[in-house]
Amino acid sequence: MINTEKTERVPGVFASLLYDYLQSRGEQPQAILGQLYRAVDSSDPRGIRVKLWSDMLALAVSHFNEPDLGLNVAETIRPHHLGTLGYLATACPTLAEVLKRLDRYQRLVYDVVSMTTHLAPGHVDLVWDTAIFDPGRLVNETGLAIVIQLGRTLTGRRDVATLITIPGPPPENIEPYLKWFGCEVQFGASEALIRVSREAMQIPLMAADANVVAVMERHAIQLLDNTPTIEPVIAQVRQAIARMLHDGEPDLTAVAVKLHSSTRSLQRLLNSADSSFRAELAMVRQCLAESYLRDRGLSIADIAMLLGYSEHSAFSRVYKGWTGISPADRRASITSN
Image (cartoon, rainbow, N blue to C red):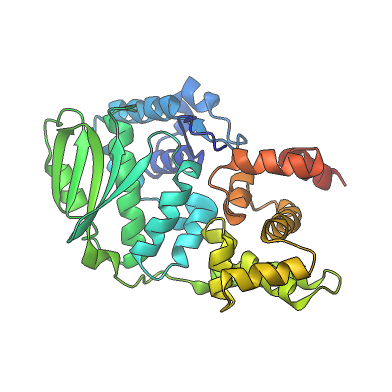
C-alpha cells in the first residue's frame, strides 16, 4: 500500500538556490540566515522541512525588504536542479508530456500539498489545495514561480500561463507579480493554481533532448543483454519494461501493445517460458536498481523514479524485501568496497 502521508518537505536544492541568489547580491547566506543556515542538512535525501524553507525565505525578504523576492529566487531554477525528473522533462516533446511526469512524481520534488489536474475544453488547471495544508504565501508563490520558470526554460516563451491564483491576502503592491507572471494574478483563493491553455500544452519544447532517455534505455538494454541466454519472448518483455519504467510502472497490457501482441497471447508465451509478467517486472527492477546504486550521481529518490515508483519509500521497502538491506545500506557497502 502506498503511503499518502505528506512529509512536508521540499528539495534541498531549494536552499542552494536561495544561497546562490543571496551571493549574487553580494551577501553571505550564513550572515543573513544564521541558525537557519546551520539547520539545513544538505546530505538528507528527503530534502528540508517546508517550515524551514518558509523561514529562510522570510528572513531574506526581511533583509532586502522585498516581498516578491521569491519570484526572483525562482527565476534561477533550471531542469537539472530537479534531478532526474528535470532531466526527463527535457526529453519530453511538449508541456503536456512534462505534466504527466510531474503529476506522477510530484512528491519527489514537493511533498507538501498534492497537485491535481483539472481539464477544461480550452485549458488545463494545475491545482494545489492549500485548504488542507497551507505552507504560507511565500512558499506558495515561490513554488508557483518555479513551475512557471521551468515551463519558460523548456519552451523558450514567457507566456506559459493565463492565470495564477495565490492563497492569502494580496501584497500592498501587486504590480511586480503581474509583471513577473505576465498574466492575470489573483490573491485570496483557497488553492494555488496555474492555468495553461491547451495550445500552450502542445508547444514543441526547445529544450527537448531525447538523448537523456536514450542513454537510460541503452544502459538498461546493455545490462539485460549481459544476462544468460533466455527465451526470446522474455528478452523482448524485459527490454520493453526497461524502456517504459521511467514513465511509471508498466502493466502487461501496455507491454503487449509495445510488442504488437495481445495481452492473452503475451501471457501465454510467458507461461510457456515458465515465467510471468510480474516476475519479469521485478527482475528488471532489481537488476537496474543494483546498477543505478553504483552511480553516485543518482539519489535514492532518482532511482525510485527511474524504476517507476512514485515514492522513494516504496522503492526502499521493495528493495529491502529483495535483499534484506535498504538501498542506502547497499550503496554504502558499494562505496566502502
